[in-house]
Amino acid sequence: GMESITRQTGQHMDYEPEWECAFNLHIKLATTISQVIEWASTDKTLLHKLYKMTVRALVSNNFIVGGEEAEAKSVAGHVANCLIYDVSVRPVSIHLPLTRFYAGIYLHLGSHDLSYDCLVAETEALNIKMTPREIIEPVLCTHAMIAQVAAGMWRRNGYSLLHQLYLYRNVRCRVEMLDRDIVCLQIGASLMESNEFLIHALNKFNLIGWAQSNYESKLAESPLDDEFMRQLSMIDEFLELLIVIIGERWMPGVSLVTEEDRLRKEIIQLLCIKSYSHSELSRALPDTTGGNSDSVFEDVINTVATFKKPVGADRKGVYVLKESLFEEFNVYFYHYTKED
Image (cartoon, rainbow, N blue to C red; front, top):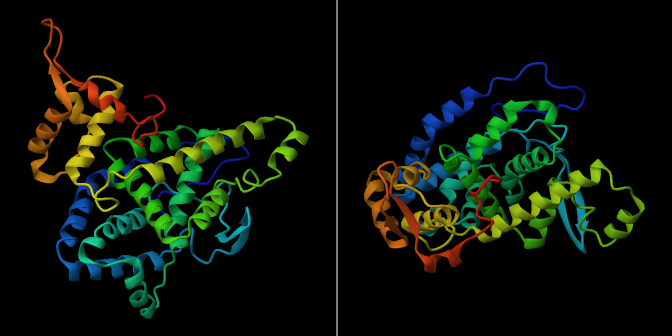
């Protein structure tokens, strides 16, 4: 994985590693990547070929899923063979361009009457088999690492990791990072039996024990130490991720919505927090509507907000969300940060 990192356990890092280059590269390429996906989606044959090329590239990439052993994990009578990859001691990366590119392509398969099931036979015939478990594994590892950072387990890795996680959610990067990761997990969840998916996620967050029926009795016997507090934080992050996977459906290809619907949802959630000026709102939104972004933005904002004129020479006009739309407020909206 590009710019992969490993958790420091003994002592603090002697020096901050270089990380800006990878994000600078991502920022320069993100728009092009989105445009390539949109271009490929216009032709069935092209999309078909690109899908197989992407799967071949993913299978040949040995990061995280290459040759890892699997172990049966059981929760509430359900069993899943989970890949054994411990994020707390093994390398993990914020940058998963191939996996995210795959997620972007996958969203357009349905518009051409293609699906994973109808394409898997073709890829297996070419000896490039990729299971749903292998699709979600790199993303699950990344989100497990993010949860561990929130739990204070990566403090010895310094500020460079915190800067990377900030940019991961930042409006400049999240379209081809966070958003694609959530789509990837939704793809995996749709291709797996639901209990199996949950076990994979629980295993990656090291919460299999928490999901067992005897957890509370074991908890009563153990002290409430730092490890317990870290586990509470991991549980919180796991449940939040689960809510996002289940609830965030405002993505073309995931559900029957348009890019305008997605933009409308984004603007509503932003204006639920505070009022924005035109320039502030424009900067807070990613450009995912192509060349017509300005006109689309104007059309959508006028349907969900009213413009409040400035009351003084030193003030600026702001958009205020229409009262009837506050009921759409989602406290778990995945583009909110802890600060919001």
